[in-house]
Length: 603
Image (cartoon, rainbow, N blue to C red; front, side, top):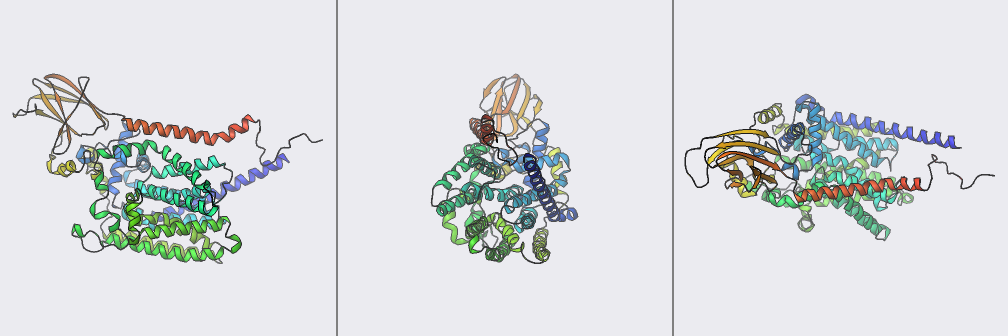
């Protein structure tokens, strides 16, 4: 009996491994098809491409300087820097930098697309296999890896963080369904289900903030629906535990963002021309910017939204017809209702009628663009389509039809980007030259230290020549530039060591923007730096003689607290995962591969 149970367990394991390998193969093949235009046309310069490319290059260089978790960008704002890596979630820029360490920078964009869309397919497979047949789950993986909104992110927006977070969305939906009790958690205790939800939820927060806000509201909606359906508070308490642990795991990122946002130009995150009310589908905004009517991108994203609405509607109705009255209370019926709930909520939030919700629901405005809810609708699109097709005759015809639709969406998206002149081969080389030549690049306005008044004056006051160190007369004196000798002993993103020798007191102007996390020491004593009022540059006063200036990026209290919160949460997560095994060991019980041991010896 024991050997039979062991053999059955091995057979089940082998079958599971084979099915996951098949899912990986289907997802990878689909991702390669999605990335095909890159191999013919080179890099696409989407809306955020330069931002992400520069971030990847910065991180890779800082890793070589043994700065393993960067906080400050060295070359942003023409070499004056900015605290970008404190505020932008880390997973996408760490992945891009890692790819850049093993491949050329021109190859990173297509490699990123292939890797993330393969991950997206596997995430969709993990969700679909709980409800559909093996063939249906594989179709769901393929449809999600090539969904129209992903193409928009890849070929027009270059929204790498959002692309990565969308790859994780199916896992969050699955974890929320299990945690709420709407479907059974197979092989996991309640505490382990909390841990599964918290880990996937935290990964989305560490990928993209707008997508994380959507994931938070979507999960809360699932928990609320479960509480109503089950007529109890338990789904809400479980959901609160999962959300709380997820926020704790990402505390090392979220706590500094919440505290240090007052040190940068956060007001620009919701500028006048880009608030949600002017970004609903087919909205005619930009009038304040003298751009009348609907811009090409607005037209493209609205058309993609209508395509997805139609496909979700048709596939959802077809899938719903499969759910018989007997199956209404089954897992399949539950999934159908939850996807209908989430896609309906997302669709409504893209319409102008939803403006009161955007205005009053906490932090919902940080989604910024209502059409971003297409990232959640893509999950319904893939699962409904797979469910509608899996039991039809001649499945390959329907699958081919779906890929024709996806291919048409791809051609439309790629051509839209091409018409805006977004395909270019020289952008990567130009960025490399800017960094190697120590010239820097344009920074992100929202991360500018000090706020909008300093940012608005930066490019009008910064000189064309930007030396790392420049000597000025002492404060209050107007004279020729003093004769002084400077020697840069160390100049990395987080440490600047400069030696100054002068016969008179002078001011030392550093190519560095003032930020509260910088600690300035002169001859071992902490000094409060002056700031050039026009654009917030650091200026250090030094006495006559030989002086040592050391500027270092310190660990502020908020970052220490955030890291402590994450460590405590990781310990809690580890305990949750190991507790069942520890209990088994304490009880002296060992698993017998599905065979229940007798409590007493047989006679």
